[in-house]
Length: 347
Image 1 (spheres, one colour):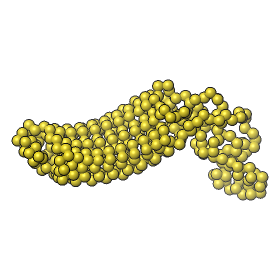
Image 2: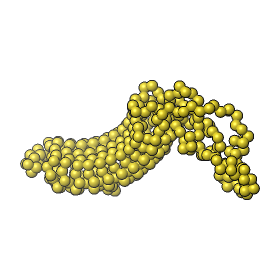
Image 3: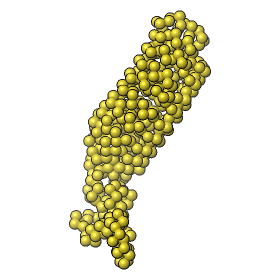
Image 4: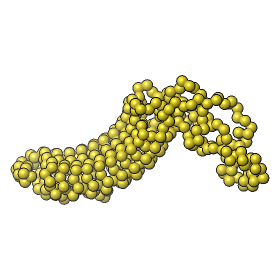
């Protein structure tokens, strides 16, 4: 059946524009493709192809290539010759690397799908994909986003769900056209303040990470959809505490000074503190603000204020309170003063 389809395609010569050979149990890419220089679309998904044939480099007019669900282990070097390619599907393979130079000729590529592969990192050469608009690398093993990716100025949609990312580079601010950013089920702890520079961002999914704090200005994003369930966020109405006087006690002021100096290994205080057991006992009860790192004895309010989330945000339904900067630090060191507040904490 496969041979008959190829013979029919070859009979068309330069006039053959589309070849679709899905699920034919092919174990290699047919070299006869080299005789079809006018080919525009090549679909070979759901086969058993471990590598591309050298003749692929002759298909310089190819605009769509689908090699999804095969056995490829790399993004092959032959890709650099496909200078007209706009859509590339490589999902469901065993890809763990890019061959050197694979990105060199893909100046016109608009969509790249690398879902369900084994990528640990992306090469710096990804920055050569100047026209890339849609990029999807879900279900891989990426541990970082290369800063070079952030210079793809035409990128509108970036999907990085189900990886092992721990942070987002501050260069993310250069993705000025980004509208959809999906980061669900990673290991991200903090979003950079530069994320707030993405004025065109409309959909953000950070569900299933370990985020506790959000950057200042986050509430100003013009989001239409925001998903953050599965993070260690504060999900209940804060308990009202007794309002403290705005003036610190002398004990608080002195204790903060001493603790901060000890943290800087001030030799004079380190020597002197040994002679005053009562002072040692007092500062031993000191805590540290999880946001700014400053020391305190009683209550720390300097880092916290609450703002309301925009009404037009579509937010995860199971959240009662959406945190904007921090909802509660590791020592629960701030108080909530407004019993009617329903909003987001922000530094």
